Image 1 (tube, helix red, strand yellow):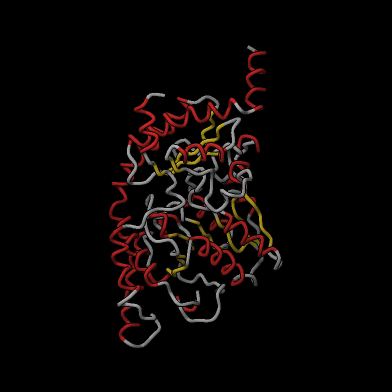
Image 2 (tube, helix red, strand yellow):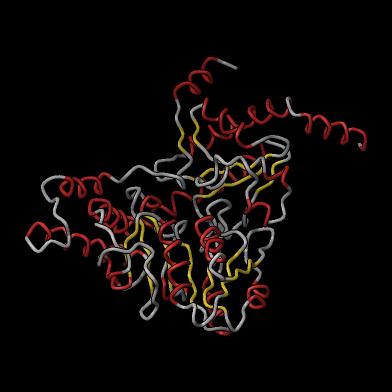
Length: 406
């Protein structure tokens, strides 16, 4: 390797893990700062300090709701997208249990939905998992087949955070409403602020989102509920958020979420125009530079910032460590499960074997990434995979088998 390339690898840093975390927008940080010191009042207090904090929350509520085309009255703040999903699944299920105890979800939901349903099963609820095709798109006929007279809730994520496939939520919600009285929830953590999201167009009754996905602070999320949809609070002890989520509000984080939501809405088309060419170059360039690569997710119906593969005959975690040594940050699936060292349930649900799924690699792009970053990743990844495969007994066996049949 020549000196120029060595210098580049020692100096270049490329962050491609934006689905896990983003830097907070400077304007959001600036708006948050006063609420840590001079404007520190409790929103429930009757004095002016409390009024200022309360007004700031309501302004943020309006801005955040606007991002998803929703009326602000139905939006309540949570600490994360995972909490919003927990509140939606458990809260709606408990509120409607007199009408039935059957829940339908897709097989590739985030663990905050899957585990919420498992928890409910201990209370007598029943869950049906709807299968997906090889691209991660829900089988519509299987969804309709899963519905029953006692189905009270259906949850299908708007887009999968691991493979990037975008579900036809409008079509799915229409089917559900045409065949049942179930409430339809969607986990839009992967999409809100990234692609256009409008609750009326999607036809959903409940929607979860998180600030960190669109350059807001960690520790801020939200759940929107259509008027008339009720839930049982999962945190008791206070009247905050209309009595639906007790606990003193994190006013700075909520303010930051509102500012970030407003910025995301204004800059949405600009970000799409920036991200899509970078995504498409990675989707084309990596399989072109490396053999035996499986592109995961839908080829076109996918998030503009998502690039996901399975590198056969190597483990994703090993690739990540080598990439990190070369200044590249990536992931091997959901940030909530990346340290579990287990095959992704999403990849297994889309028909990939355990062996192939172990080679999962996910790049998620951000607004600061450039085409030079993308080309650097393509150049850097190929020799890493080649080196790891030379140490893989599976790859050696594969080469011998290929040679024998040539």
